[in-house]
Image (tube, rainbow, N blue to C red):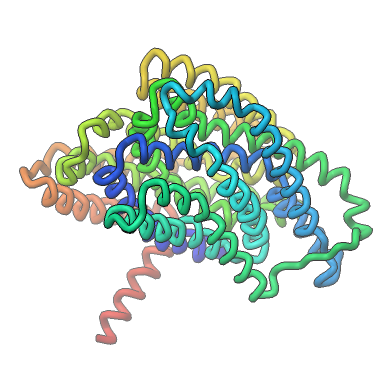
Amino acid sequence: MSTIRKKGIITTFYIYIGFLLGALNTFFYFKYFQPTEYGLTIVLLEIAMLFSSMAILGSNTVVAKFFPYYRSHLKEGKSELLTIAFFFSLVGFLLLLGGTLLFQPLIIKKYSGKSPLLVNYFYLIYPITFFLVYFQVLESQAWNMRRAGLSNFLKEVLYRILCFILIILFITGIISFHSFVEIFSWNYAVLFAVMLLYLMYKGDLQFSFRISSLTKRLWKKMLAYALFILGGNVISILSKTIDAIVISSVIGLNYAAVFSLAQYMSSVIEVPQRTATSMATPIISQAWKDRDMDKLASVYRKTSLTLLIASTFIFTMIWLNYDDAFRFLDMPEIYYLGKPLVLMLGLTKIIELGTGMNSAIIITSRKWKFELYSNMILLVCMLPLTYILIKSHGLIGAGIANMVSITLFNTIRFGFLWKVYKLQPFTYKTLIAVLIPTGVFFLLYYTVRLSNPLLNIVVRSILFVGLYTFLLLRLKVSEDVEQVLTNVYLRIRNVLAKR
């Protein structure tokens, strides 16, 4: 667990630098772009995410799942695992390209009414999808080589730097919106190139064009695993992207931009989970290989508590300062419609993170087929709910559909791991981790009410961080978080002492 504690939580801290830059980008989008223009960039990415989950054909998860076997049984330079992943990813992309071109008239008919801008720029989805697919394959290899920090930096920081540069070029009139969107669609090509060159430099890429005896022995398992995970991944991504896609079709790109604001704020809560997943997946995979159930139970329990602490802290900070932040930034009126969405999506993220590494544990276990089954349940629940509730309740309907579906989804996965493997992540400290931020929130919300919005944000935030940290350490809620906070304190003290 020390590996996850030292790299995972600390890496999360650095990733938030990227989110600060992302917040700045979002502010510029609100101020200098039309809602339909901002909505276009969001929907292009959402559709590309969905398409990439299909085109990759499960290759990235095969790399993560079977890497320990190739490392143990084959000499260095003899593994063809990455070669297989690259080949099938290309096949998947070509199939996707052909399929979408075939159904292009239907796509035009569906979106031309409410989102004509999306129809005009639909072709840009293809370069985004292509490089996103290959970036995800390399990302799995980076995780295997314990270089998750690199992929997190590229996704969370470098990507936003590239967007920031494009935004500034657009604001200053150097490029038109057309040029902005054209260049925007190649951002993932830059990320892929950087990842490729870095892994090559470190000697972490192994390509062999000879089929090994190990592959001949495992190919049936690998194929079955890839197909099942492919289905699960497509369903999972569809459940995450369906909102913006349906909103842009039913009520327009401008409301997709409003939804994106709420989704972006809730995605800030999700960052610790991304980091923990990249750090914990190789450890969980190795534990299954070694049949070390104690290790699995420990990782499951500790990641659940750590992620719950992180998610409740972040959400409470957001919700405590939400109104003041909007007043200070003087946001366009249309974006105020997203406040109920922030509440519902934020609480949904807390539920999701609080259940820990259930997805990584299921995917790397012998019962990995349940990943597909549970995602099918999620899709069956979310698809009709999302469409019906958006049609009847607008943006609020998307939030309700998310909360109901994700809560049911994680309850089923929790029950599965508990029944089959006797694994469950909760202790009495779980309740304490929820009560602390809740109590501090109500205390500060009703006692600190300054007229100046910026001053109110600063005072509330300082008091919240201080009280929250004090109670967390005083009640000894998490040894991992306590160790990280202690290390941070000691480093700061040492730096100040040298001065």
